[in-house]
Length: 94
Image 1 (cartoon, rainbow, N blue to C red):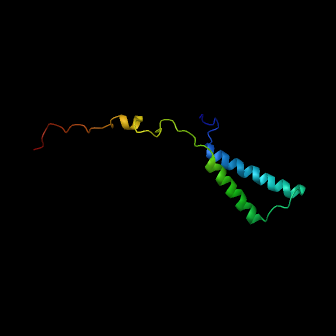
Image 2 (image 1 turned 90 degrees about the vertical axis):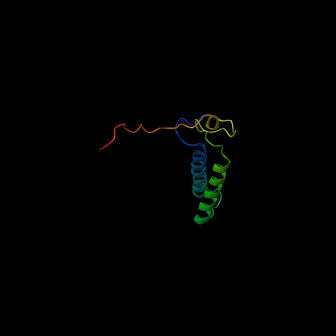
Image 3 (image 1 turned 45 degrees about the horizontal axis):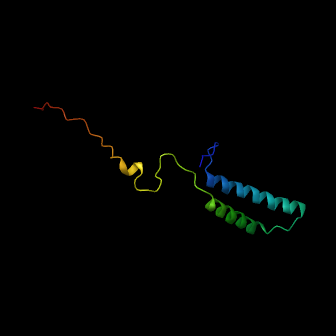
């Protein structure tokens, strides 16, 4: 899966887009009298619940350089990098 060129994570974009669309639908429905929208507290709950489910179902944005789920990934096959401190000076103090 390719990353979004705008830098928005997939789940965040789906959640925010769902909030925008549902809010617009409820506002237009109330303005043009298509149907009577629910009270504001219930509208907020509906928008939050639907956007949370949509973001949960959306695919994850892949991260470059992360594990793919198998135990033979690069993280497990490369030896750890060990940094050594510089050697102590050879001279002694009187």
